[in-house]
Length: 135
Image 1 (cartoon, rainbow, N blue to C red):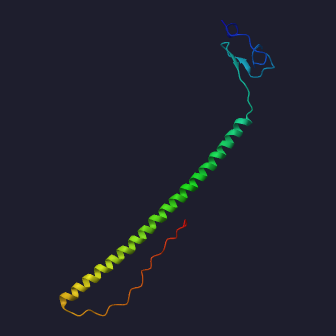
Image 2: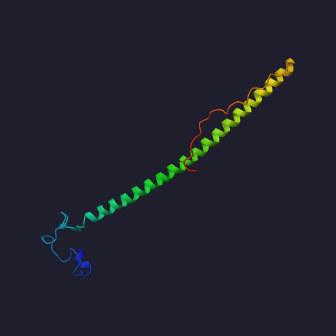
Image 3: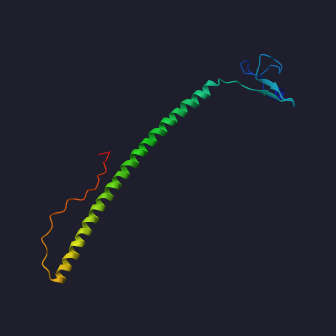
C-alpha cells in the first residue's frame, strides 16, 4: 500500500500533494531510487540567518556587559584587598619599631647606661597609596 491510499485526501493548498514526481512546477519534489516520495520545502534563507545574526549580536552585547561588570567587581575587590594589605604592612612596621625600641631600652637597662636623647619622630614611611576607582 502507498501513502496516497492510507492518508486522507490532501487539502488544495498543501504543498507537494496531488502532483506527480515529474511535475516541473514542484522543484523540491522528487523520488528516490527505491520509489520514496521526497518533498523539500524551501524557506527563505535570509530569515534564519538574520535571526542568528541578531541573536549573536544580542548575546555578544550581553557577554560584553557581563564581562565589564565582572571586571569592575574584580577590580573593586582587588583594590580593597590591596588597601587591607597596605594597612597590615603599616601595622607590622609599627609593631617592629616598638619591638626594636623595647629591646634597645632593655639593653640600656642591662648596661646601666643613660638613655640617649630620643630621636626626632620618624617621618612616616613612604608607602604608595593605591587609588580607589570606586569611591
